[in-house]
Image 1 (tube, rainbow, N blue to C red):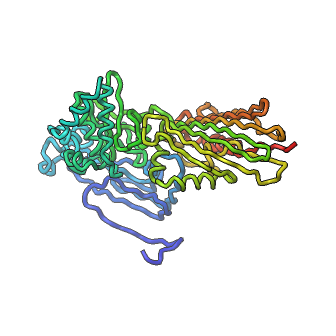
Image 2: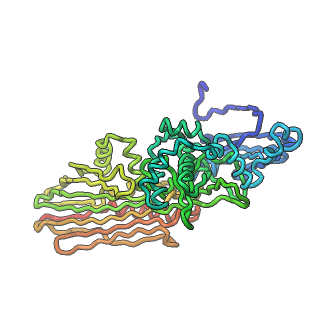
Image 3: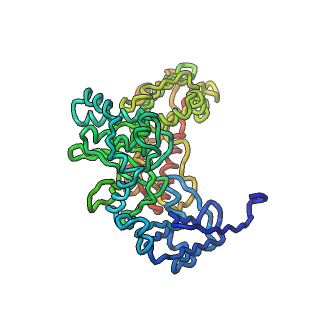
Length: 495
C-alpha cells in the first residue's frame, strides 16, 4: 500500500463465502473499528469461541464489533499470540437438511465430540487411510529391525532411529503431503509424512501405536471442552509399552527416543483411536533443559589467566544447541559471538563432542585466556563468564500475559580459580541463596576460599512451567539479581 506511514488510518472490507476457521481483530497495529457479520444458516450448527470476550464493544446474533483496539504487544515466554489476541475461533459442528445430502448422513457430524473428531481423521484419505494400507514397502525394513532387536523396547528404538533418517522438509502438518510409499522412496516429507510412517512401522512390528494430534505452542492452545478439527496442525506417534505411553517425533535428528519436542510441551494432544469417551491428554516433558558448566582457571605470576570451560548439555539444552549449530555450520561465527559477549577473553581452541549422537552427553570444551587490562597491580576477574543468561528476558516493568516456559530448567556451574602467591584477595562476591514465594524458581551462588583456590558453585532452577501475571515482579527481580551476581568481579591485588 503506497504512502502508508506512522499515523495513517485505512479501511479494509471483504466478504468470505464459506465458514472461516478464525477471525483475528487485534494485530500489531491499533484497530479503530472492526466488525464481523456472521450470517447464520438454519442447516448449519457452528460454535463460535470468543478470544478475550470482554474486548468486544457489541455482540449479538452473529454480529461482533470492536472499537479502539490497542496494538498487540508481544511478550517473551508465551504460548502463542493467538491465545491472547482479540478475535474469534469458528468450528463447524453439524450439517442438517438439504446440505446433508451432499455429504451423506455419516459425514454430517463434525466436531460434535472428541470421539467424532478422531473418527473423521481416521477416515481422511490424507491421514487415517494411509495407516490402513498394506504398507508392503516396509517389509524389508521390518525384517532388518527384527533381526537386531531383542525386545519390544529395542524394536521401537530401532524403528524410531530408522524413520529419523527421512529428512524433514521443515513443514509442520497433521495431514500427509503424499502417500507414505512415496515418502519412504524419496526419504523426505513433512512432519505428518514422517510421524504417520513411524506409526505404520511400529504397527508392522507388532507394537501398539496410534497418532496423536496437536496444536503446537506457537499455533495456540485447544480446550478440552471444545472439540475441534480445524485447530490441529501437528501429529506425533504414541507407543504403548506395558503400562507406559511414549510419545515420539521423528522429525528432529537430535531428538532422542522418548523426548517430546518442546513445540508440544504442556499442550493437549488428541489420541486418534476408534474408541468412545476419548479426550485430549496433557503432554508433559520427561526431561529438563540441563546445562552443567565446569570452569578451571589458573592465574600466573604476571596476572594472565589460562584455563578451560567444559559445558555439558543434556535434554532440551542439547537438542536446541545442536539445532542452533546446524543453522550456523561455521563454528567460527559462534566462537566470535562468545568472545564478543565475554569482553577480554580469547578462545584459543574449541571442541564439540558427540554432536551427532542424541544419546551420549554433548560436551563443549573451550580453552580460554584472559590478560588483565587495568594495571599490572590490580587483577579483576568475572568468574561466571560463558554461562547462564546474559540478558534479562523480562525487561518491562509490568506484564499483561502469563509466563509459560516450554520446559523446566536446571543450570549448574562450578568454577575453580588458582591464585599465585604474589597476589592477594581484595574483594570476593558474597554468597546468596534466593527464591520466589513457592520456591519454584531458585538461584544460589556460594563462594569458598581455601588455600590458593577460590571456588564458586552456582545453580539456577525453574521447576514450574507456568506463572500468572501476579508473579511477574518477583520473577523479574530474581532474574535481575541473578544477572547482577553473575556480573560481579573478583578483585586481586599484587603483593
